[in-house]
Image (cartoon, rainbow, N blue to C red; front, side, top):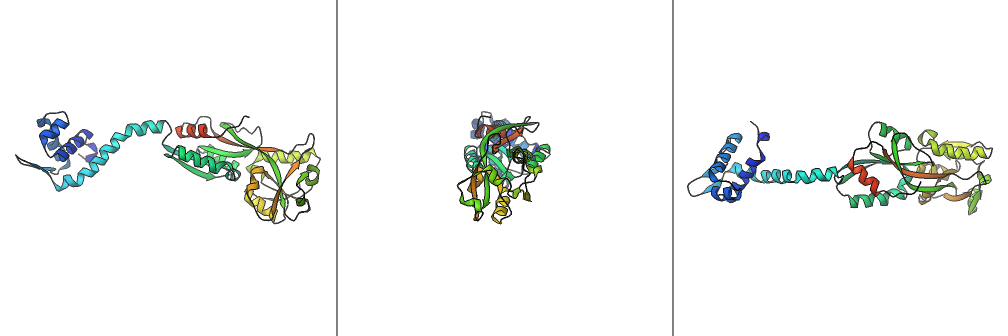
Length: 304
């Protein structure tokens, strides 16, 4: 028989005797009579195949084996006593693991303060952060590799099987090189910029916003002149600084102060507005992770 089969009751009896060094006092502490306690210790020694106590008519002393064992047994009993509270905390989402993906634009303003506040509010929830584009997040949801994701999108974006909470809404602004002739203006008109070479993300990573931007061009009988594609907003802005073209970026990207790049608001025309973009927290409609519900409740929210 192995130590894994030993009941906690025997370990508690061992601790009582070890701490009292007196079978009578230990029995009284355990609210039992002495003979059953003596039998229990003898049974424990048999299970362990070691002697735990040297007994005489006048004294009880722990053996070296008992001295070595006592701290570990105390730790075992403390952990066992904590299990019910740990189970309750886990069921309430106060303890656990949560995998949160996010797009790079969320890292400019929204995410840092929100994540910091959530970690302070729920310090026992292990929050794993993963930077990922929208298409990567949708794949991760399909494979159950993430619990929630922060995605950038156009209004009305609603992937099947996912629930959404809108957490930010902002206009698109134009990033252009500092030396560009239009950079001297405080704001721009839409007709001034539609013919300029464009740096943009591939459609596959953000189809709703990509189509919204292209729709703005088509509404003005223009075809976007795509000069370069790049995935990350930081890379797009860096390419703008190199003079490859202009780029439509969320207003929050202004906080990415890349030397050689300026950001300008663009005034749309009647029937041809400059698109807005939204950032939302998404999670599976059938999610069972209780930590997720705490994150959702903690997330900021805007009316749709």
